[in-house]
Image (cartoon, rainbow over all chains, first blue to last red; front, side, top):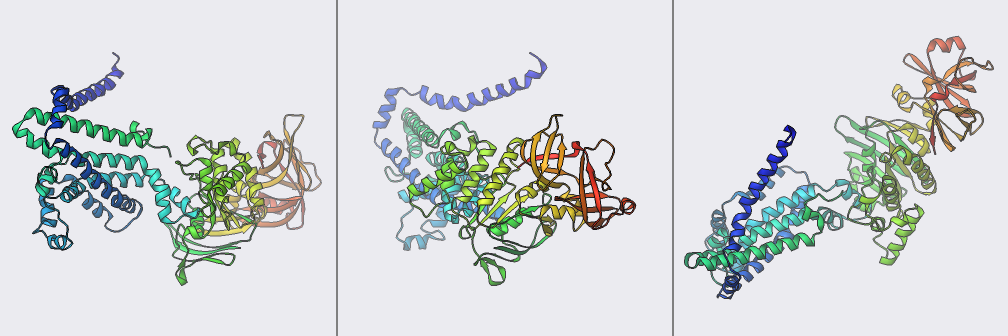
Length: 269
Length: 354
C-alpha cells in the first residue's frame, strides 16, 4: 500500500464501523422474529389499531406541518427582519427538548389547567387523552425538523428565479407556488421525510400529554412499550412491523419526489 | 418613453441618476462592475425601491415615492433578461416561455411559446430542460421568455457575458436584429464599451451611481467628458465589411469610405475597434513611413485635454479619435478644422463580427 492511499482506506473503515453499529440492532429485530410471530403479533388485539392510529395521527400532523410550515419557512428564508435569528432559534427549540419535557410543556400550555386550557375548553376541543392530543404532540415535536429543512431549501433557491417570475407578471403568491416550491422540492421532501420519521417514532411527549389508551391515543411505539413489560417477543414483533412500515413510507416519499433526493445529489440549478 | 429619476443609498456610494429612452430606441449603459448599472434595471423593473424617485413608461406611472406610488413588478410589464438568464430549472424551454402568458387560454400559450422559440431558432429544444441547454440556447430561451408577454419595456443585464467568445459574436448580431425589431424602449447593461457601442443606439457611461456622459458611442470616444469616460470608452468603433486579403490579413472596407487591414480573421459585417492611444497623427497628404499599414485622411473636429494628454476627435467617413501629447498638438498644428492623417498598425486593429 502506498502512503497516499491510507486515508481513503481509513475513512472507508470508519464508514464500515458506523454502518454495522447503526444497522446491527435493526437487523437483530428481524433476525430475532420469525415470520410466524410477525403475523401472530399483528393478530393480537390492539396491534393493528396502534399501527393505524400511528399512521392517521402522523399524517394529520404532517398535513398541519406542511400547510403552516411551508409558508412560514418561506418567510424566514426570504425576508430580512430584526430578530430573525431569535425567531429561528425559538422555532427550532423543540429539537433539543427532551420528549418528556415536551409533553409536560404541552400540558402546561393547553392542558386542562394550562395557561390556554380555558380557551381550549371554551372552543369545545378535547386534547388530553384524545387522538387530537396525539396529533398535537406529534406536530410539536416533528414540526421543527420540517421547518429547518424547508427554510434551508428555500434559502438555497436562486433569488433571481423569484425576481424573474415577478417580472413575468406573477404575484408573490404565484411565484411561491410555481417557482419557489418546485425549486426547493428536494429539500422540502427531505424535511417531510425527517418529520414523518420523527412523528412515527414519537413516544415521550405522546405518553405524557395524551396518555396510552388503546385505539384512542396508543400509537405503535406506546403499544410496543406496553407489551415490553409483559411479552418481549410480541414487543419485538410489533417493532419489526413498525420498522418495516416506517422504512416503506419514507422510501416511497423519496421515490415519489424523484431520483434527485434519493441519491442525495443536489438539484440542478 | 421610459423615464427614470432615482436616488438611493448603495454600499459605498449613492446612486443618483436620471434617464429617458424613447420607444424603439436602445440605450446601452456601460460602466465598470459595481457602478450601479444593474441597480438601475432593478429600480425600473420594480425589484428594488429607491429612497426617492420616479419611474414612468409612456402614460403608465410605475413609481413616485413622493406620492407613495410603487407598482409591483408583476404589474409593470417589463421584459427582463437576467445576467445568468434565470430560466426556471424545473420547467421545459417552452413552459419557461409560456410562464408569463397568464391571460391566454392553454393552447394559445403553447402556440405562442413555440412561435417565439421558432423565431429564435430553438423550437427543436422546446421540451428540453434549461440544465441541458448550452449558454447560447439559454440566452435565446431567456429572450423569448422576456418578449412573450409583449412587454412595455425591455431590460437586458449583460445579455452576452455568459457566452463564450465564439457564440458571443453570433449572439450579438442576432440581438441587434431583435432589438431593431422590438418597438419598445430598451436598456442594455454591459461592462464592455465595444459591446455597448455595437448594441446601443446610444451609450450612457455609468460610474459610481451617476450617468457621467451619454451620446452616440463614437461621440463619447471622440469628446469624452472626463478622464474616466476617456479611459472607459477606450476603443474607437468603426463599422465595415471584412474580406480575406491575399497577404493573409483581413481587409475591411469601412462604411463611409476608406479601407483598413487587421490581423484578426473575420468576414462579413464587422465592428473595427482600435484604441485612441494606438493611433498616431501626421500631416495630411504625407504618406507616413514605418510599419503601420492603416492610414486614413481625417478632419479634426474637437480637441479635449485630459490631464497630460489630448483626445483628438476626428471624422474620416466615420468618427474616430486619437490620443496625443500636448507637445504633438503644438508641433502638428492640430486644432478643429485641421486635416491630418491617422495611422495605426494592423496588429492593433481588432475585429468583432456584428
